[in-house]
Image (tube, rainbow, N blue to C red; front, top):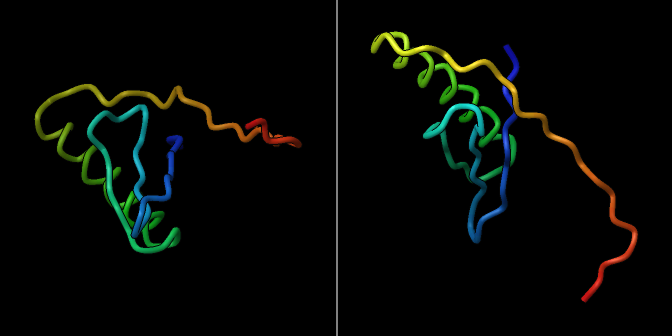
Length: 73
């Protein structure tokens, strides 16, 4: 399965979350670190859900980037 991940720049680091897995979040100092950390967090999150007998949500979110040519102030 492939889950969409949102990565956001914070003041001193990056954070990431998975819209289809509520509560699955992490932080890292770099984008590469946060990518690695969220992959581990997804595995850990799903493992915990299985142990609790909870259904594993199917990935339904889609990430899409939109290029904006002009910034409006």
